[in-house]
Image (cartoon, rainbow, N blue to C red; front, side, top):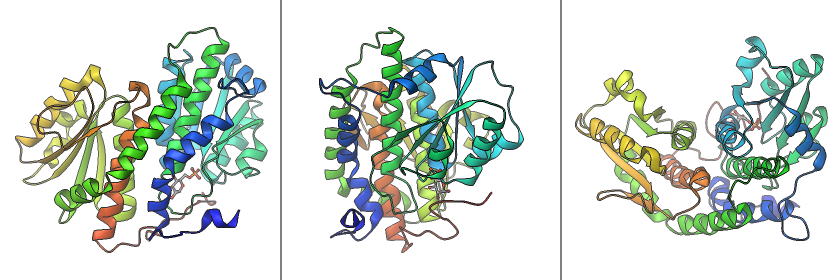
Length: 362
Ligand code: G6P
């Protein structure tokens, strides 16, 4: 409905869309629940995923980053080997495929030409595809065998925010329902955990002033900025860096904490901003070791940790959510930081230069 895409009192669509994330998560849980309140996905889709010997996730940009999280869900919850591919690479450098692959296209718009080229190719090879998209009736939806909708409402800002978290949530639900279909007990009450996530998102949205201050403190005069993390945090770092470069034009890169010493640490100078995510218990000490390494070379480090894992000097402590769902909340400070950095620098937040919302050419 048309009022859905009004900015209302918001100065930018991006800020409005960041704020909508808790509502979107609740809506997704509702849309994917049956009358008893149990999570549910169309049986034909569950069967298609169960029948696959390997999942091939194909996407571009932010959707690719959601796919990296999705791989974790499918492997950890549903025990299905999963690969994630950048669409434009997959078309020309198709990997060796297994006997019974299922392709999962993740696309906010459902119109990305790079992803469509892969879909056309794998349909020619006779394989099945599931599209996860925000736009019913989009090309990738029509041409795939199955569709799961994101229910995020129209996303207008070029930099994707609520579509990313919606993608992650839908992927979690799909992996959980498939796990159940395979009689795997994930020991996660996902509906409940996602409602905890929605509340945590609200808390974070209420803290936007803290993130504005961080943007001011760390990025006002920055030439570049780095995001470091391990495991799920690494994928979120790639997304945080993409967000920042897209709208503020600050050169931003995400690195796996352990890779710093193999090259990127050479870039650290006095005052280089380094954002570190610490939401994963098994690598908490490792990432903090990486932060020490960059700080001793002059970096200006900003650690965002999760409750229970926090240490003295952390810049912000996220509310606690299930460890596998942290990408849904750790991304929010990074979205806000990017937004405010772009705003402070006078950039056109909703319509960054050289970028299009939906790229329908190869
Ligand atoms: C464009 C947008 C990105 C988006 C990417 C994939 O490059 O600027 O924000 O992540 O396309 O879009 P899709 O609609 O396929 O998710």
